[in-house]
Image (cartoon, rainbow, N blue to C red; front, side, top):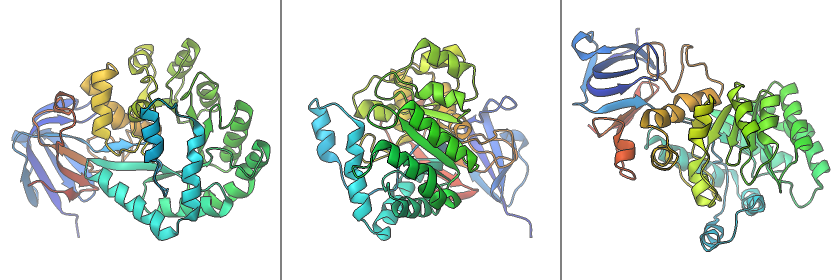
Amino acid sequence: MNPTTTVITGIGELTTNTDEFGTLHDAALVLEGEWVRWVGPASAAPDADHHLDVHGRAVLPGWVDSHTHLVFAGDRTAEFGARMRGVPYSAGGIRTTVEATRAADDQVLAATLHRLRAEALHQGTTYMETKTGYGLTVADEKRCAALAAEVADEVTFLGAHVVPAEYTAEEYVDLVCGPMLDAVVDHVRWIDVFCETGAFDAEQSARVLAAGRAKGLGLRVHGNQLGYGPGVQLAVEYGAASVDHCTHLTDDDVEALAASTTIATLLPACDLSTRQPLAQARRLLDAGARIALATNANPGSSYTTSMAFCVSTAVLQMRLSVDEAIWAATAGGALALGRDLSADGAVGVIRPGARADLHILDAPSAVHLAYRPGVPLTWAVWHRGVPAVVGY
């Protein structure tokens, strides 16, 4: 039996993120099962089993959120309140969540995972990465990885988040690179390390990346969040898919990113929540680097799943155009997760052969995401060719 087809017409503005189609007006799409099968003008749309007229609304690819921390328990509102009164953010606050996560059972952790994934989907996020990193024992990291793999599209092992109080740094790196990595490897695709003052230095971070690469995992780095440091250069040296935060960059860091395939993933909601400077998105793009936008959803430094908030912030405060911000939050996120935008099953783009992940706005153009900041504009979401959020 052939998959059911659906034609979507009356698209006022269609953002495809492709050179072939660009941005189309008065457009149409044909979906077949999980895939996009046809893109073009509404006047030429072929017949299909079902028909949906979106009456002039804008359609764009579903958001691709390439950096989240959704496996946790506990609450850090007191820490947030203190920060708003002027207490600076430090990596040490992570340990509060570690204690709560270790004490929580699987049902509690799974409930939070499912709640936040559903929350993101209802705001247009159709592809999502999440990390371990709040267990920091072999058993807890393994169960967090297994739970994450049931919910997220991509799972990253972040055993090297901070050093637990019961270990020295060197003892803990040995554990991460050995028994802990062995325990999680079947549940994850990536390995990550927090290369930062208060977490792991360059030598320790390099050991973690090398151990992950030896196990066949892709590489990611948390870098240059709290100050200037070696994270960006290390990520580029090791060919990491992404280096995330990039709040404090030297000219050499920018040049290295521009000359590499490593994506600079910017986390504006985190910068705002920690009262750090916003990452210099304009500087990176003008230098020739590629960027992604992500939420960094986590209980301590960025408790949001709203990619639209990140996009509007990037436009209004980071000097990106709307088109640049949307690309970074869709195609950029896909590249940061090692997804080939030209391959069948691609995410972050709308073209024949791509996955049918659509975000339909209750607005005539994507400009409204920044023009009307904070307004819930999601009208419908199609996830793998199925309506997940229905406004019609």
